[in-house]
Length: 159
Image (tube, rainbow, N blue to C red; front, side):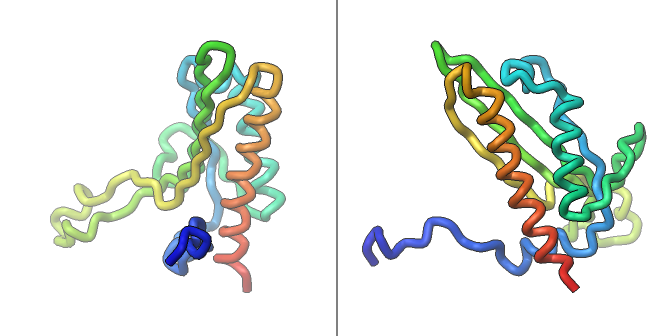
């Protein structure tokens, strides 16, 4: 098999599609670590608003982000931009976080202990960009990741 015959990207597998099936909605959590999105000129509120608008376009219900609601599915957004000489190295990730039960602990006595917070869907992007293009490139890459989530959600929930 030659290099031209290799398929480097694959469509979502059936099991990956099923992860987003019957998802009734998500809350949006944006990572607020120092040096995260600020170098890109994006505020936490702006990122949250951008993600929520895109979710609504795909008809994904946006759940209220309330304290103590960790059990509800949430889309965790991380954007980190680090200056390296005159360029920025940027990492963006989207994680659908949900409480799941580890099957290796199946006894009823251990059910509470077997529930963990885990990413059931994940996508990320890394790129390098100059300061002038940092804000626009960061929004564009976040938009691509959101489009991936939205497309997979729609495919998993079409009736």
